[in-house]
Image: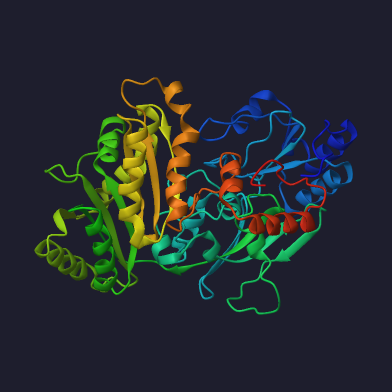
Length: 478
C-alpha cells in the first residue's frame, strides 16, 4: 500500500460525489446497515468504514472508483461477507469505503449451446446453480456458503468446494471477466471463448487476487452437462492409507467420474450429530474414519449404480472398506452431505477451534495427517483433532478443538503456535498453507513467512503496476 493511502479520512466532497453517483439506494452511513458487514464471518476481525456503497451497475462502480482514484480513497470490495480469512473486512481506522456488490445480481445470459452463463458479481452462487439447472446445465462450484456467498467473492478468492476433483477450482470455471480497475477504467474481458492465445491471459491476475487489483463486476462461467445419474455412498474406511487407495480405485471404477471424495474423521461426525438437528449416523457401527464418495454421469443410464456397487464390493473383499451404505433417495443423500457441511458450524458451537486450510499432494495426505496430528497433540495434550475435507484434491480442513478442560480464550491464544507446527510440516511436504480460503488478513503474516522472496517481489510488482496508489483492499494479502 502506498504510504498516503487511507492515512486520512475521505473528504466530505468526495463522499458527496459518490453518494450522487449511486443514488439514495446505493449508500448508507447508518450504523445498523453497516454493522453486519464490518465483521468477518468467523468473528475474528472487525473494522469501520467511511461509507457503505452499493453500486447497481458497472458504470456506477467505475464512476465511484474514478472519484476514489482522484481523492486517494481506499476501497474494500465485498461480496456475501463469507470470507474465512477476513479479506472483505475493512480496517479499524474507518477511512475506507466498503464497496458491497450485492445489488449487481443479474444473470445476464445463459447459453446452453456454448455451455456458458454470464453473471454479475453480486449473484448468489446458489442462484447461478439454479439458473443453470433450468437450462439443463450444471455450474459445478459448490460449497457450504452457497446460499449466501456471491460469485464475485468466489472468483476473487479462487474458491474450491466439494467438486474440485472433477471440475477444478473457481479459476478453472471462468472464461471471461469484466473488471473495474483502480483508475476507474473498465476492462471488458467478458469473452466466451475456450481458446484465445492473443497475449497474457489477464483474467487470471484478478481471480484469486482478493480484491487487491480491481473490482470484478461480471464473469462468463463454464457450464457442464447436468448429471442425471448420481450415486452417493458413505463408507467406513480401514485407515488413512486405505483412503488414498480407495480414491484411486474410485476414479478407475467410475471411468474418472468421481465428482466428490470427502474424508471425515469420527470426531467431526460426533460433533455434527451433537450440535446440528436432523443429522443421523449413516452406519450402525462406529469407526474412526469415513469417506463420502459421489459418482455422477450425464445420462440416466450411464451405469453409475453398477459402477458404485462393483467398486464397493471389491473394496470390501480387499479390506479397504469396513462398512458402507449407498443413498437410496435424495433425502438420504442430503443427510450424508448435511453431516459433511455441518461440521464447521458444529465446531463453533463446541468451543474454540484452531483451523488450517491446507493442501499437500494427494499421496502425502496420510503422512501429513499422522505427522501433524502427533506434533500438535505433543504440544498440547488433550487437544481434539477434527480433520475432514476434500481429500480427492489433497485439500484438508485440518482443525483442532479446544481440550474440554481449557477455556476458549486461553486455547485461542495458541493459534499462532499451532499454525506454525502444522504449516511447517505442510510446507516441508511440498504443500500450501491456504488451499481454498485465501490469505486476507488472517494469513498475511504466514504468507510472508513461507512464500519465497522472489514470489512476493513479483506479486508486489504486479500490484504496483495495476494499483500504483495502493487503493485496492489495503492490508490484505500483501
